Image (tube, rainbow, N blue to C red; front, side, top):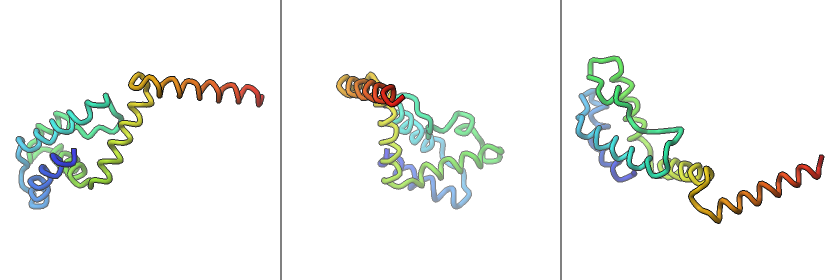
Length: 122
């Protein structure tokens, strides 16, 4: 994700600063990269995918400022931020279960032990 975000940033951020229209091809490439990256772990709460309404916003439309803000946020992230977001998505994906049998069975055993310990306390 860092490579295509960095590549898009080189084009998009200067245009945002100069208040020039953003090229749809670059926005589409960025959005496609984000979609494919997020698809690896299923749906996520903090999606960076640019909604169609924003993608289709014209420079004179009210939504265009929201598009600029979204793109600036996405392109402004450094490697550490992107890695943290990726780790969070992966963690949520693993905790949903069904990805790793050994982890799922270990978590189930720990949950049962915790429940048993709580019952003994009360």
